[in-house]
Length: 205
Image (cartoon, rainbow, N blue to C red; front, side, top):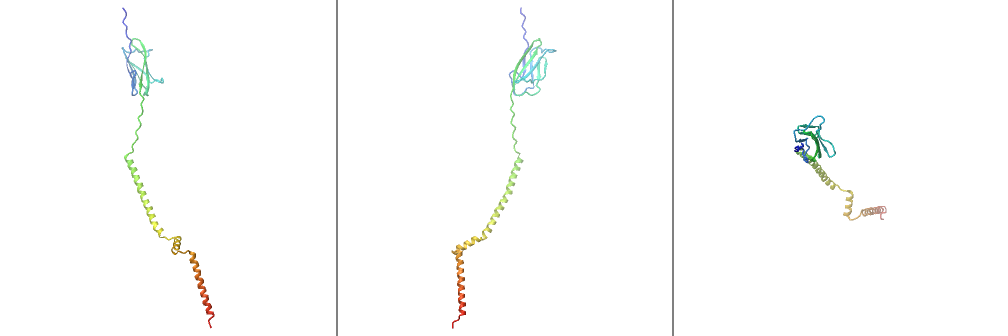
């Protein structure tokens, strides 16, 4: 009769699971095997390694407890694909090396909210605007009052050129006509005075 065949121990569970897509980085990798436990001792290697797409290792020190093997991550895993490779020696002395993959999703940082202006800041801005408006209004009124006060004085003061022109227009004669008339009058008076003086010097007999 043939001897019965005994099945070897194997991996029965893991965290993360093979092919799992994680929303965030796990804190450790944990593998659970069938059987009564893993064989440990000098010269026996039970190890788990986690590497990214560039081949960089991310796992910490491997710990074995019964049929469970685990390793903590020294830091948070960035988004990307990872490969878990392990080597174990089962209780029957059978050694096995296997691997599987998992993924950590890329995280997009949320934009920082824009701070809204406080009510006190808005009130201060409105108060400053009102103050500037009030301070500018009297200056405009003063300028308008000065302009209106100056206009009557300028209107009442006569201008020499304008007066002469008005006189010429009222008389209808140019200035030189008055000058020649005055000379004629003076000459006529001089002639009369000369005739009178001559009459006195030569009285009739």
